[in-house]
Length: 318
Image (cartoon, rainbow, N blue to C red; front, side):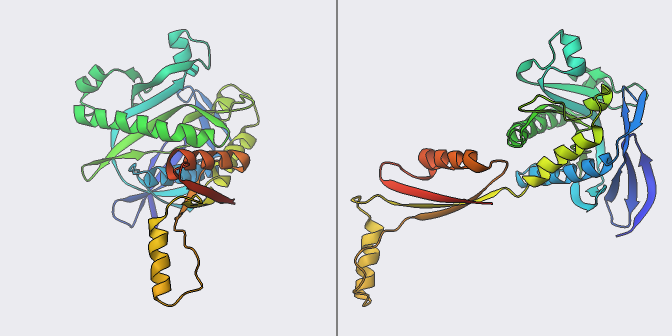
């Protein structure tokens, strides 16, 4: 694949054409901006973090059946994506009041919302990406009723799966932005997912782990971005779990009795008893140590095994 001419340069990325039909390259920059470009700076390694984290998050969403524009990670700071016809709406999903929302509502910072709040912004650099309503969207013909409903539903589903995803990595997902585009009549999640477009707080200390460190001159920018990527990368493969379920002693096991009879018929007279159970494997993302074992125990007791008539044991492997 050949990286060809630059077709767009934004505040955080450069977009290049390729020799592959319908595919483009996103090169993530270390440049940082805030307050509609009024504040500018540079965070060493930010491009690497944002590209690699986007790669991991998009692949995770794809595994859950959520379509994204992502194709693959090309190098530390570049990803290959499908070219989309972009919908000029930016959605923000807010789980906590922070930044501009806290000011607009008069809420204390970090007040948890009663339910996730979705806001719409008009993607226009000239206008400063203003907050808009559904009526504005229809007036500007930015999306059809069906498209608006679909992108809203997708954003809320992404929120539902990423809250526990980050929670398992010791992070609180306070809010995030999403962009969408259309390819062959279907809607795809676009842009990126990184500390640049979401608010993340350390679950124990409450420390800010995102671009707000740049906005508020809190320092430790490079270290914070690197730590977020470390947590995401470290937990990407998860823990492998093997679960063994068998009938309790004294419980009738028709399958086992049938197999015992068949084995004896075939001449295996030395077999005195057969118990037939289940073997289950699964992968846990974001859980480790005793927490993982507690979760697996709950799974067995609530669904995978019948505690009245079945015993279970399990192994958790790194």
